[in-house]
Length: 326
Image (cartoon, rainbow, N blue to C red; front, side, top):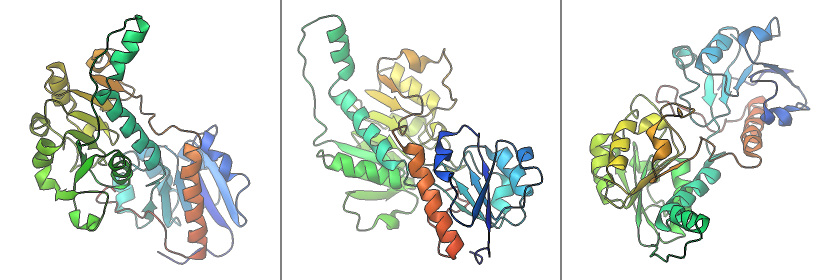
């Protein structure tokens, strides 16, 4: 990256003023000035920034803000996924882009475990029996001995692997570059993306934790879902469009697979009339699986750590490849 700015560092923050994650920006670190706005026009005649911090403004707003910031050499996204950040203008920009990778992995991994337990212990039946005061024992199953297939073995996938391994599950995964997981004791086997169908057929349950890029849109499609075992559960905590929602719905409605736990969807909020709402073999989360106490603070601390690195001229954490989208 370029040399750190001399003197005062100006940071433009694209965010709503009532965003609960902004608290850690006050007071600003010594030598730093934050300018906050929800729209590019809100920054008016403010001094041109060295840094842009995006807190969910969206690709169009961020691109418009970037056009007003010719001196900005670093852009940070407070989200881990970049599908809501990237634009052609940002990709073409020479500015370094970083994200919040890792800030939400632990909470999402806990949700993954909860979702898998929801199905093997049939918690929906327990709640229904209790609500009707019905004493009707039934057999439950174990996670121990099952194999979790992870589609997209990044930070979320690895955090999930650590937790399910502790419960006795085997872990296999697919990722674009399997060599990056060489020697990883948390995963039994890592396959290239070309072997996705093989993973879907071997796994007892499937976790989708891949980012949304042009290459991953619809990655888990009809053919892949058809390979799943009848007793399998699909958990998606990545991005909705990575999974072919229509193909998944067909499999669920026909009882082709046991169930699905979904935190993300093609359209958010999920429309009131969507069939997912009424399916008993679906567990829905309104994209809040990582909304735990301090979740935005953790992401902002990561930014502030990077900001200190930027001002010292040190290597930034979580630099992403804008062309790959992660």
